[in-house]
Length: 305
Image (cartoon, rainbow, N blue to C red; front, side, top):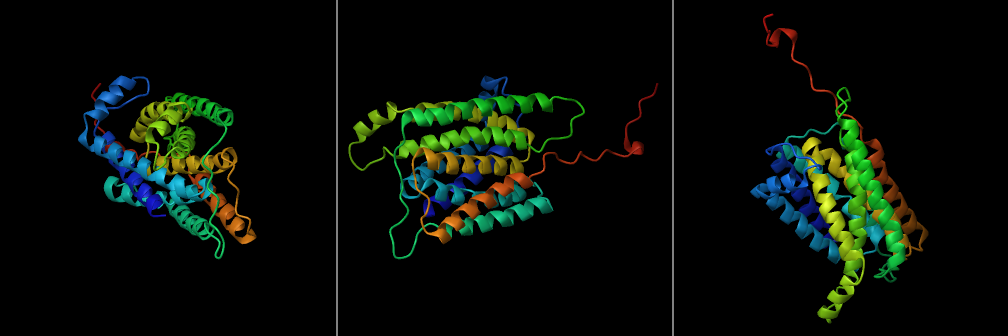
């Protein structure tokens, strides 16, 4: 629990710092990845945010060693609350009434998942540490292709001149699929973390598909997420991305790694209800922002004929 909450704090802080750095940079695009990397690597604030995200990655490894995938995702969703609070405080992004109701739902989902973690008087939930490689590739490769395709489709739609301003839901879903694959890869890497035999563990990791999935999702996820963060509100795009990632990891990760759900009916109901409530966050997010108010006619600069 402590490691999960620490990961939430680091991830939320990292995203907010990156967003604040991106607002001061020229417009970036996935069509120019080298220019994007050059710009962000020249920003100390962005580097601080990326270091916070990397530290959150380390905390996430600890979580996957001790908690089942479904339970861990339910706790990770709680980071959305901190993210929205930091966005309002540091970025000046205001939340709507619908978004505040979503935060309340997230808190309720967190409570349900926490109550489902351990049954009093019995052993803790089983934590699996392995999955068949063909099954992992069968799940992950189509997901990566779908994420890249969806992001490209969102890019093409936003270039339409008269389209309403997007909130970033499409971007968040696309990046969330990539980060979902990354989360499964982190779970796989965590299975090789032992207190002895470090050299053998490194060899086993390199022989698995997990580091290569992390490399792909890290490279593409970095470029895609930075371009999306610069265009859209962090208080919306990150919650959508996080919800998709958690749902993807909880459902497909539990099936891929063969982790059993709680046998007790009450704990099972709490686990499923908490997950369903977290999914409702994504469904309540608006697809478009309100257009910016136009200045009155008298305030416009008049150009003589």
